[in-house]
Image (cartoon, rainbow over all chains, first blue to last red; front, side):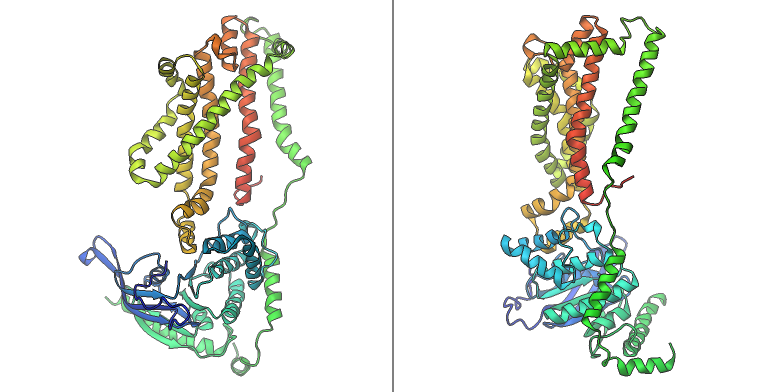
Length: 265
Length: 304
């Protein structure tokens, strides 16, 4: 569902943003909290430009996943408006591939639900699998794939939705460090090749700096935008780059400051 | 990290872009290291592991049985010998009635099961998806599973008379709750992540039911079918033993009851053996392969 509550994102060709979050707040019912509701997100305003790669960074409880769910249209904001350029694709921390289908059929299901005709589906699925460098995996069952391969198929399935915006909810958090590093390169490459907008949620500072053009730091309880950094380091980057490390150190210091505030009262 | 290396890293960062082929090679290496291989066991080993043990068990039972007969622990009219029962099998086979007994019951059982399937499936979907229906009849449906289906035979005879529809009614009352409950359990156990993933892909409403909910619930549903068949068969035997009438034809239940009336122990044993064998055969030929297929496809089958 395109949550075009802002009402300005209908025209997909000339959209000025991939996602627009305007003064969005979200609270959940919580007995015991003042007013019976717990405020999770407080007055968030954030634009993702077409083709931009933005990471949302924060400690636990900052509501970053909640914000992503709101942008994905899986939940409604308590206040404010969210507009997206078409229905966004969403990738989870778990691969969320359907185990009753092969890798290829998972992608073909996404294509089918998008209304792609049967003859083109197979071809398109092959193309997407090749994009994530898994061209021999079409007939493989999900359980026959490694964790990294599963996330790549999940990425291909998300790309099959042909959205302008890809939402990623800590998609590499459950992978081992070596695989994660390789998938960072892979995601950066695919982002450059497809020109997608990406909104990427993580609690890993280096990952955020490694990938993003812009890092948005959220404070916790309630989640507010604490600070933003524009990362104009050239791609491809490496986790070990001194400049990445330097900016990561700065952001980590800020993040720790945010976390420390919660211990003080 | 040494400070000299650090400085070098900064200056060379832009100058050392990754070779795309190198990344591909790296990834291929990771994939090869990580991928799990599923190997199917050779047929000889399957025979040794799966067929030999039950054959041994059956042989052992026969030996013990024969020893008990030789020891005359009970008079022959109470304990028929294996050879007497075998004689009964041969006689029924030569008269051509053996397959007739089996077919009468099996055709009733399977037809009743198909009816139960047609009723239990939509009922299960309703209970799982509509909370009012679940609150209203969910507990009753679970409770019905523990009610012995023999209890339905007297009312069924009174309502429907001594005919095939009475048999089907008893089968339905036995099997429908199992099938419906299996589907409900299957749907309840769907990981919420699949539903969320389905929704982001645009599978909502009926398309969601078809592409996500039903396939995701399949393992529980198949388990329900398996149990549903067992209940169908048990209900049918109860109905056949209690309700006998010349119009109904001789099924395995009647065969058993006739054996009792004729005080023919070999016939009683024959009937019990056939009931057992048919139950096992249907499970081995239809439901177990179906279940294994579903589970293996999802990587849920742990090979021992």
